[in-house]
Length: 76
Image (cartoon, rainbow, N blue to C red; front, side, top):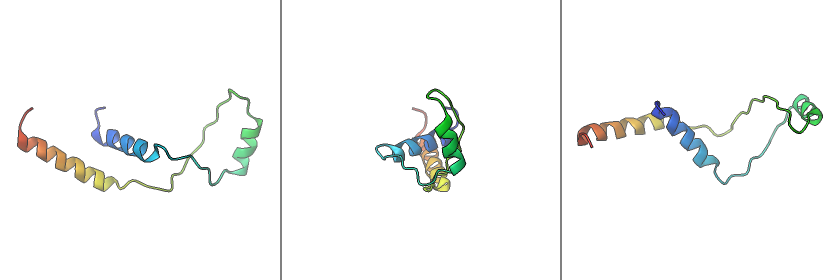
């Protein structure tokens, strides 16, 4: 990936989600009605809101630290 921030965010999401069961806390009644009428191979777009959030500033700071370390150590 060209953008290391995106790669880090994807990694964090995958690591945090690994092994955790998915739980649906709230399903809108209109969505449930639609889901009940869909066929097995039908698709529907949904918006998922996560309750846990990643502190992007911490990730940015860690990435800056790693970049500085690499710059100090010279080419590999």
